[in-house]
Image (cartoon, rainbow, N blue to C red; front, top):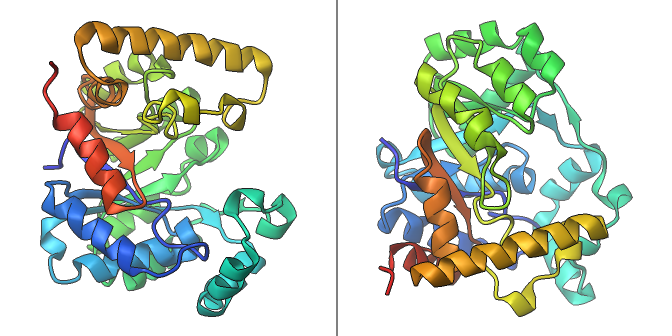
Length: 307
């Protein structure tokens, strides 16, 4: 059984953060508030996201559901940066370097590998970082349609399941096509997909089949990367949407959503979280936060009764 809201842990850790204590406090606060589902990946913060989750819950492992992902390969420069984090953090702070200002060349190019051998190694590495002997859920991380269709990964995940290394497996998909292909596999336990007030296609495209096959639905980007939670004056749609046409379309959508929220006497954030978490077929809706204060603000918005 999982909580209605889960914590997405993509921004837990990283060389741009001062220290890890704030993230450990965030993870503990999430658990104390009733959240028991934590979604991470082996590449998030070069593995540090998993490491911090392992530290936070090593004494309460049975009380949380940990979902991680595998399939992406870190470029050499990111692996190198991961080893030098204690040295790099003060340098980055002193120079005022920001994550969003780094060039693609500086970050390196991500590649993917879904071969059975790679998946076995990835799981073992995640288990070490998470300080656990099992994963509640392993998800293939954004595989292409042709990889899902070939199914070479399926025997490997079934073997890991028989060995007790993973309890369940699923796919985190980027397209409707991949989601539909994933649902052809009888061992599929979950599907993670984009769902929010601005992106509703999966309501009709995937959720009916999820329900029919009793596959768990994990909704991500439920606040559209913060667009549905930030004050109007803080939103720069050009950061999220590349063309002026799409920016105009999203602005119209946002204005309509704000009108709906006002008519119901509630906040846009609450409206967005209710939409994602209560869609029929969604088992858990992911929220993202980097501080305890951000988390509490989201939970207050979700739990506060309309006027």
